[in-house]
Length: 238
Image (cartoon, rainbow, N blue to C red; front, side, top):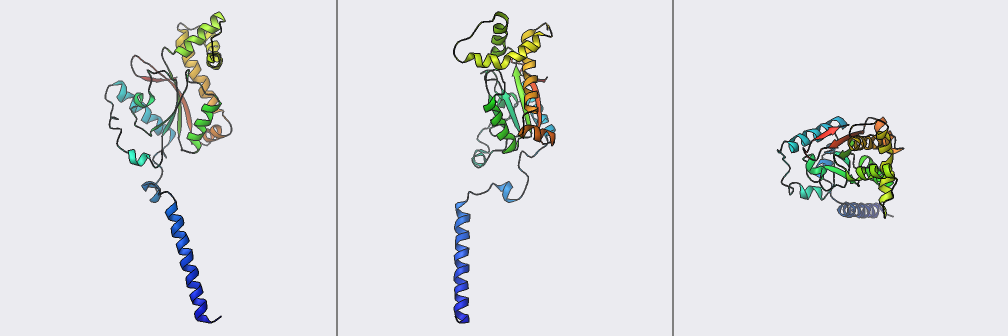
């Protein structure tokens, strides 16, 4: 083949390659601005900084000085990806809304809710996703005052009754906390059992292999516990 023909063939291959690259790039979703600029993810903060944000937000909420009111801000950006800075294991009680209690807007918290704020296999998988895939640096197990699930468990443990339907599954999950609280002979069994339930689930998450325990050991994740007081709106560590 002549030199001119070789050059023509090479040019056609280059054009074809360039066209394929252009088509492939066009098919890919556009990256958010922070990714295009190689900047760190918005939730790439330390566990201690994440905890401080929660504490500061709760102080604003309890003081009736919340700032997160315009939920339309960032709506378009949130359609591209999510970067929550904290995971919350919360009770399903309608009087407790973690986003409000910590004065955070949409996309800021990765919340797993179940009556009694305990961690089962599905909840653990969700938290693993939040920590490993979304980069959440902090998980808080959040109990609350006057928890109906804990109170029901106390009554079942005391009188040996059996609840209908699937309610026994909740009781069995919370029972160890009630038994541990009873052994302390506290003045307020409900309050102590609520706190003990938080402590046991924090311990469970700290030791959850292989994902969460490895992240904790590497200093990339912190797991803490707290109790929300419904009457005051304040969150206190346990």
